[in-house]
Amino acid sequence: MTTSCYDTIILGAGAAGLMCAATAGQRGRRVLLIDHAEAIGKKILISGGGRCNFTNLHTAADRYLSANLHFAKSALGRYSAADFIALVDRHGIAWHEKTLGQLFCDGSAKQIVAMLQDECDRGGVEIALGAAISDVAHGDGQYRVTFGTRSASAPALVIATGGPSIPQMGATGFAYDLARRFGLKVVEPRPALVPLTLGGEETLFRALSGVAAEVVARVGKTRFREAALFTHKGLSGPAILQISSYWRHGEPVAIDFLPALKPGWLVAAKHARPRVSLASALSNHLPGRLAETLADRLGIEGELGAATDKAVEAAARQLADWAFTPNGTEGFAKAEVTAGGISTAELSSQTMEARKVPGLYAIGEAVDVTGWLGGYNFQWAWASGWAAGMVV
Image (cartoon, rainbow, N blue to C red; front, side, top):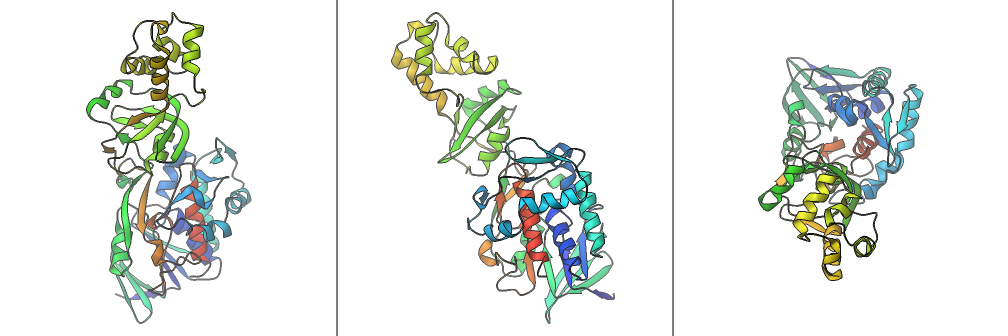
C-alpha cells in the first residue's frame, strides 16, 4: 500500500474539521480531510430545523462549560461571531436573528455546507469520504492514517470527529479512543442539551405531554429563562435543554412557573377575586391543563378566599421554586452535543495542539468545551477550527 504525503490530515468533516481544512488549505498547506460518512457536514444539515443556527451574537467564554472556564477565550476572541458572519455575507447567504442572538439561514443549512465546501475547494483541500479509519500510527515525526484501501501521512494530525451525541448519524467516541492512545486525558463524556426524564410521583406530569410555558429553570446558581415543554418522558424545551448541561444525576431541577409575576401576586389575586379557584387564577398566566395540574398538586381546594393568606403565599412560593428530581436524561441519542471530552489541560488554548504530543491537535466537540443552546457550539467549532487551521 503506497502512502500519500500531506502537510495536515484532519479526521472528521463536520463543522470544526471543515473550517480547519479550509483555513489551512488557503494558507497553502496540503490538506487531507477524512470522514467515514458519505457526505460532509451531516450534523450541520439537520441543525436549527434544517436552517442551521450557525452562530450567536452574544458569544463569550462564560457561555461555555469546561473544566477550564478560561480555555475558550483565546480562540473565541480571535475568530468571533462577526468573523463568521462576514464569511456568510461574502457567500451571499441571507440570514436572520431569531431570538436571544441566535442567527439562522433564511434558506437552508445546505447553504452553510456548500459555503464550507467552496472554502475547502479554494484551498485545494482533498476530501476522502465513505472510508472508515482502520489505523492511526505515529513515528519519526509523522502521523500515518490507514483508511479504506489507502494510507496517508503528515506531520500534523487534527482530531475533529466530535462526540457520541446523535449516534444514528454515525457519531462515536472515536476521538476519545484516539486521544487516550496518545496519552491524552479525557473528561468523562455525558449527554448535554438533552431532555430530562421523570419517574416516581412526578410521572403524573407526563399527562401534560405537549404543554409548554415560559419558565425559569435552575440548577444551583445557574438559571435559564426560556420555554419548557412537558413530554411523555419528562421535560424538554430550551430552558430544560440549557439546564441539562449543568445537571448531574440526583440533583433537583427547580422551576419557576411564573417568572414574570412579583412576590405577593397570588395573595393580591385572592383579595381581588376571592371567589375564584386556584386553577382559575393560574389559568390567567399558564396553559389551562398545566394550571389545573399544578393547582391539584398544591392542594388548595374551592375558592381562594376560603384559604388563609399564609397557605396562599406558600402555594405561590412553591410555584416559584418547584423542585423536580429527574431520574435521568434521554441520553446521547437525543443530546444535541456532548459535554466533557479531551481535556483542555492537555491542549494549547492558542493553537489547540497537544502539549506533550507535537503535531497532534483536537478541535470542536471532541474537546471539553460545551456551549449553550443557540449557535454557541457552532461558533466554538468555527473558532477552534480556525485556530488550529492557522498553524497546522
